[in-house]
Length: 245
Image (cartoon, rainbow, N blue to C red; front, side, top):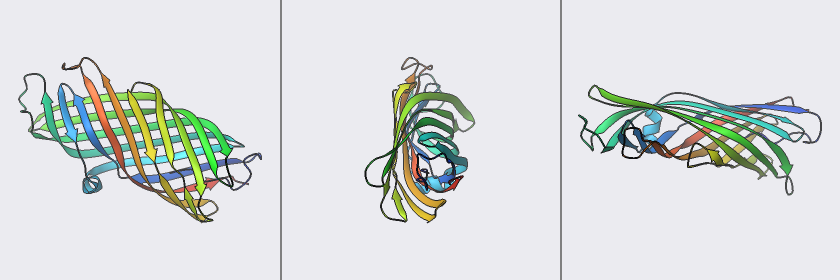
């Protein structure tokens, strides 16, 4: 969830700390290649509700004057059916079968940046940071299985404006884009709407889409690894602020 706007002038000496636990009904839509096999995941909203096995999610931020420190962590265990779409070596599994897929996903993001006042009472946070994606994929069919772990780290730039629509309603999109690292392309889109319950508490709902295109190894060999797809879904949470003067 997005950070709350400051309740005091950003230039005074107050330190503001925010914690925001949330629930992200996330699923994978795309192609994953492991151990010479390529599987396609395509999950609907109903799939996400009953195939999210476990998860731990939240973010925090610290703001001192105009300096902003940001951190976000997601751990998601998903089970899903996957269609085997390619097989490049002798294998007991025929192409086109449906496999049981288990995907453990870890996403850690950190950022450091600056808070700007833009026009009227609206605001902008601009940060540089890093995001690490960990994918632990296991594909199973009638006792046969393959597994693979991929860890992808990228430098990112984060752009997060805050638009005060009224005394109670805030619109705060979060945009991030990879500027170097392990992936070929990565970006995040996260439009959010927030309702202010009190000066220190907001309720928020969002749709978060995290896109990755990454590959390694030689194509058409068992060493080739690839993830091309989205981790996305609805998100709901609350944000508390402490220490505002």
